[in-house]
Image (cartoon, rainbow, N blue to C red):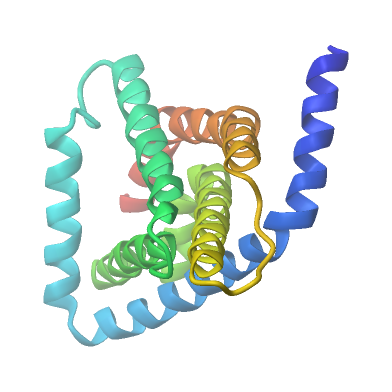
Length: 213
């Protein structure tokens, strides 16, 4: 137990020192982008419906809406865990800050979903609170955490590349980056995504049905 507590303490110190600002920035970018995408999709409702339809078809093809709840929950967790891992790993490409661009894609889909719900006569706030927020409470912080990690990795890779060009910068070692990233995914991101998958499988569908009625 003391080992686990020490790991969480290390993670907390690492978060405060390296990730907190990046996570808050990622959250701000996501929220602002979602609102802007929602406004844009409200002007082009047919496009919003096409985006939602495409995403729904992709989810069904991956087994996210199958008859067996446990399998559905596992599929959602594996998909989200893989997506968050990709967000973090994509940071190895210097200067591009790909994790932020991936976050914008998620904001795009959410903006389209809210617009599509409103098109069906469901208020934006009602749709968010019943169909999105229950599992997003866990899923979005995990995504923001992954984005902050990916952004940090991108910044450190960029610094190392600049140092090779003869400019003096301070950067973390590869060993420290790898150790901290693994700890973050095991202690924070993984558990959050497991909770999100369970809520999305067993609770969100019930709320969505009540919303449609």
